[in-house]
Image 1 (cartoon, helix red, strand yellow):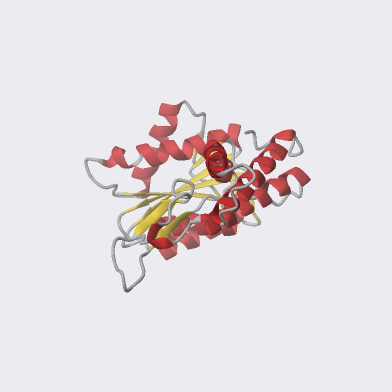
Image 2 (image 1 turned 90 degrees about the vertical axis):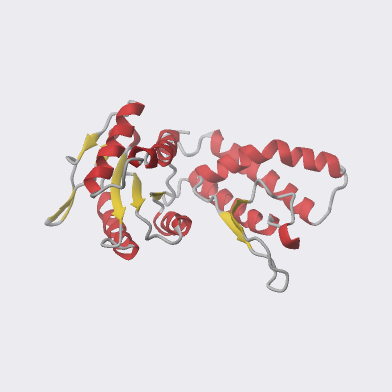
Length: 262
């Protein structure tokens, strides 16, 4: 999906239709309203749509995971960061994930409705940017198998190695976004994706709160020039909840944060 394409094109209408049908079907399953199709046919239809619904939700920036704990009186294993699409037919600890999943799907529908109406308040990442995030998540940690990075520059060098291995044309530490007398320079820029990448090293000397303050300032500056922003945070064991950091930044700022733990 090209984020720069006409937002009124039929692709968005198709995604809205897909997610609305999926939303209806999972709620029917939750309420045991199987007729007139029958239980097996309803389940089959949900299974056929689940992969596409998940991807459409991810592309909309609304994908969420869920932590499910047993009742205190029962005890047992806590299910952490569960993919709700994977367990929608399950009821761990007697609790269905479908109500939460339905909320997530509704949020994704709202994103595509904004895009189809061209309100200008929603931005979608391109498939290339999403693939790049995945590559960084997979390859960055192995690049430090011989020892943890000593500086942010070490992480930047490894990110650049990944970009080069993917054949991504980029510029390092040259493009500038100016706001008044201040000039901000992202670590990498990729013109083909209208993307700026900023690398952070979270450590005992550079705590998560400080990292988030820097992200806040960078978002304000970089958004003046680049449509899409990606923050790569390499964590030396100080970020307690990487998933929350990623989701909060996506929710409040509409930017992608990849947290890679050493």
